[in-house]
Image 1 (cartoon, rainbow, N blue to C red):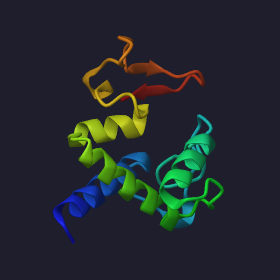
Image 2: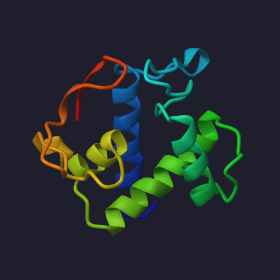
Image 3: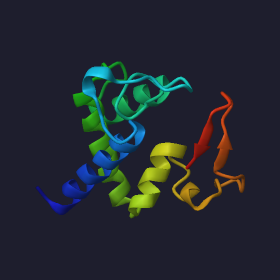
Image 4: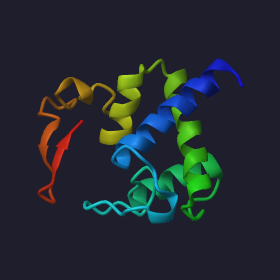
Length: 125
């Protein structure tokens, strides 16, 4: 396995652990409280369709642990190719493609990347 792939897998494992409270239980995946699907990486329906289309060639590909892991590894490789560091990769996973530096405390529009979302849930990129 080449170094880029090793790094991509390491980032993906860390994101999976963070999204699942430290440990992934594939037999009991939880849906998020902000509309996220039952999945390892807390995909929203729209994001899953977009990313499945891009990385798997079909936006209607079922969300399975194998499919979402492949999508995330390929996406992490793209982030590596963009020169993102690990913090920026976590930031774009959490806050969206246009927010590689939201982990610093501010979104690109200058607003705080710590607060409550429209569902009233706390977030901290």
